[in-house]
Image 1 (cartoon, one colour):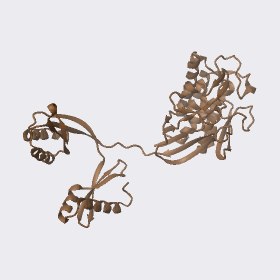
Image 2 (tube, rainbow, N blue to C red; image 1 turned 30 degrees about the horizontal axis):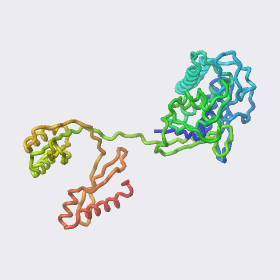
Image 3 (spheres, rainbow, N blue to C red; image 1 turned 90 degrees about the vertical axis):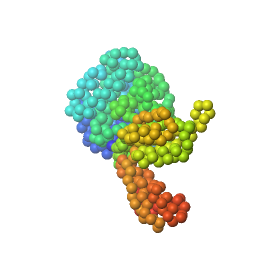
Image 4 (cartoon, one colour; image 1 turned 180 degrees about the horizontal axis):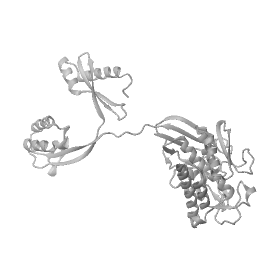
Length: 431
């Protein structure tokens, strides 16, 4: 399984993810083609930058009237003020203040742009989902129908390109499952159309849902609504970095240099062995408690049960009613052997009642390997994980007991010798 792991120690935005994707090996041309396919007059610019001395990739969305230079805004370029809820109202302050006269686009128009673009079905599906989540978040915050949510023209172009190119980059990377660390959302306040609000702003907070968050570093907005929507679009699960073989990594840069807190998003791409099921089978459990039977008989019965095919028989001392001491006998066996072993218990002991039930048994595959010790041959029982790696190995008790008796040496010495010889022959296979 191919894993994409996002380390959001300085938050996430759309352009940070685009930079991380390219830095991790996604061809920049793949993102350019997706941006061109939208036919909204925007193009991408890519360059190498440094954040706290770390090299990273910076990707910007440039609208037709912008210069092909690094924009003056931070990596929160899509943070608030990018949309309005009345199509003809004036826009709120934002980084693209030169475009405050621009029109607004309803959600339905944006979705139609995505649907009509020559993009793969998977890219369209993910992108539409992201914008629907954005629209639903704003509609819920302001208690308005989702059809009344409008996006500011300039902010909408940036967001469309960020989201669609993120979906195209994710498809190109071939990741099967997306994971992420807890999100550093930042702190302080942000000025948007609705006034000065605490970070994270309402739309971001709604989109984050139950994602684990924290605040670190200088006060600033570190997770944008676009970044939060992309995380939802990718169906990200939040958990620690799992065991995997890292095959690629990339750093995506935000626009602002933040001393002591690199303004970066790191992407790790790794291969993880698919979990293989451990074999499961049914097992019968037979139990009875006896307080009036000779202990010598119980030892004899245990041997009979094992000879008849029981997997295991064990006895435990228990205290019964009226303070009487008793013995609980538990028998584990294949379900088809239950009648035979039941009859042995009734015939050979004083019990007049049994309990039995079926349970599930998980068992690792087992095999035997013979090793030659100075005192004779010993079988080593080896248990293996489904992937074939050794989970456990131990000398067979009966073999070791026989050799200890024949040579009049301690049993523990025979066991140790057999295990030492096995480990020497395993050549690193044993873990």
